[in-house]
Image (tube, rainbow, N blue to C red; front, top):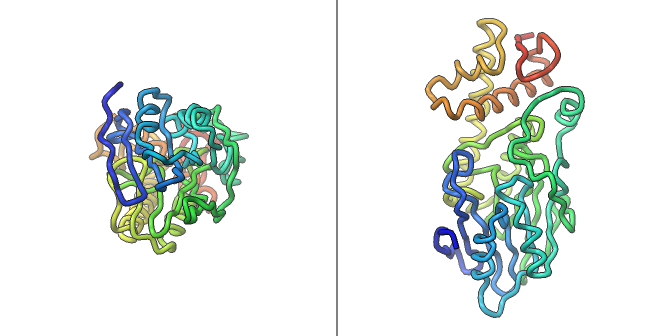
Length: 296
């Protein structure tokens, strides 16, 4: 087997396994969570990694059984192992929907009529056995798991609330801000999802990458401020004249290592789309990531 981080007990009913898939976008690797004591829900089984699958199965406590496989969203570092695991343990896969569902109306329209690029790391084959709606509860191990539709990073993104904790996938992480890459990512949706979690009275957030967040209110406030600051920087740069997303990225992210600029440019494009929808900027040519944008 490949090496993985040791099994970590986060509480009496939550275990965490970290997959050995570190990268600039996954940080130290994808966290897989096992929730429950007798009936186990596995959240985000991870990438197509047979070794990680065997670690998950080995982590199930003696006498317990996996009854649910939950996926936060269909990126390749989260969902491919779900079907293999579900078949091994004879349990259904739960998620918001198949890959590509949950996009905002703005992104759905643009995705159909403009070449926005993007699509980084999509698990195109992902289809759950059972689809969930926002606020739906699942009886699990004597308690309730609540599904929270939290798009922004991805259209079909779900967080799962368990008491005063929530498993937040890629929406909220401690180690980095979230990639928002159109047409799957949407700034307005991201901010709305952050505010939804802020209103939920949570004490701890378990992200799919990195450490637990023990001060959710502060972290969520920081993420909202970060996005509003980036928006202000985009508008400020456009006051100097029309610019492409690439040029804006070089200006705004000048102090960020250049190997991160492609991801940063996707975030800039997301802000430009949001600002266009709010009639604050416009695209000078056919809408696209290589066109110039200007203030209205």
